[in-house]
Length: 160
Image (cartoon, rainbow, N blue to C red):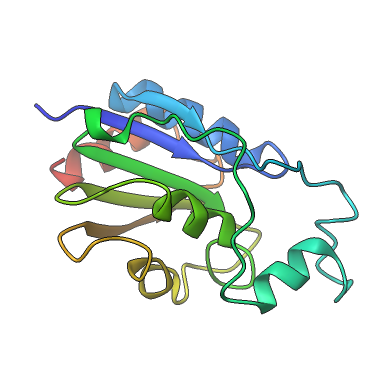
């Protein structure tokens, strides 16, 4: 049996709730990916091209600093990584997180929350931030509408 971690970034609390429920049903530990400088409501205004999130997402090399770098990734075999979808991909802070640790030989299952879009090019955009031996599986967009039973069935279907 593999040891699991649910690591998530949540800007508004939606992904946090999904991550907590997922950790519970998967029998996983929980880790929050926190930005060194928390996002404000103004930072998240996607309609403002000069907002922090808009600027970060337009620059693919942007790597917002994370507050804590002690996720103990070496202890886990499977890491569920969750985030809100921003502009059809993961926020660049997820790249920061992936580049901060050695995920060699581990399986990453991504999950996301979204107001309406799917994963887009998320897996492709994240692969460059991990070692070639890391497996990234596209998971699901989970917006908190799933029951615990549905989440448990999904985790079981992954075979991880």
